[in-house]
Figure 1 (cartoon, rainbow, N blue to C red):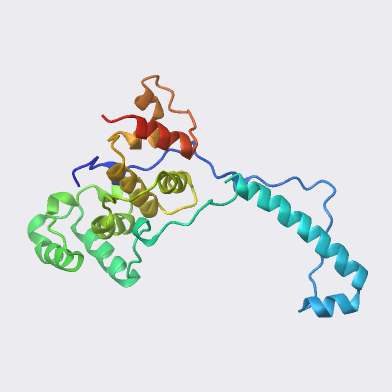
Figure 2 (cartoon, helix red, strand yellow):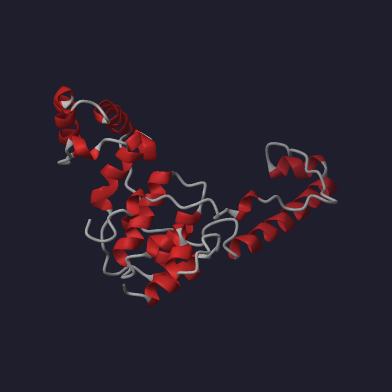
Length: 231
């Protein structure tokens, strides 16, 4: 890739947190019993209790929906297929990860066959120099997934700002696997003219030049800032 080649190898720092991990207040909470197997059966057994439980559930749903609309509990939009990490064959990933572990740091002459097999199956043209030190930065499974996803990381002419914001939101989601995070980070790097966009996620202090890497930006701020700059 020509744009920000190291973007796919960067992992966001720990300052981003998914707010859904914070529990909602439990004071004066009404305990809900497990209802019978159908709403009809429940209503017949105890109509008054059934109506009370439905009312409580309805209020809980409205509360969750309010938080959802604030983009705190869940993402606000789905991404089209072109913006999603590809589905990978898990057997292939495991086999390539095993080969990578054998090649990583080993003598080049002793792993020529493994390297040839890796390149053949992954459809790559890597050399043994591309493998040393992989396990120091990330596990071989994640590294292999990034290699296999590389061909799917590309520029799109019709990408929209809301889609960029959603990808940024997912990059910030600590619950998303690292390889998927790296995919969306690389997609942003390829589709936004600001080649330093990864710094907005990882080292915002470096980006703004004030050294404040503890700064927490929301996805909208990240994208709006990056779109204003063309370094």
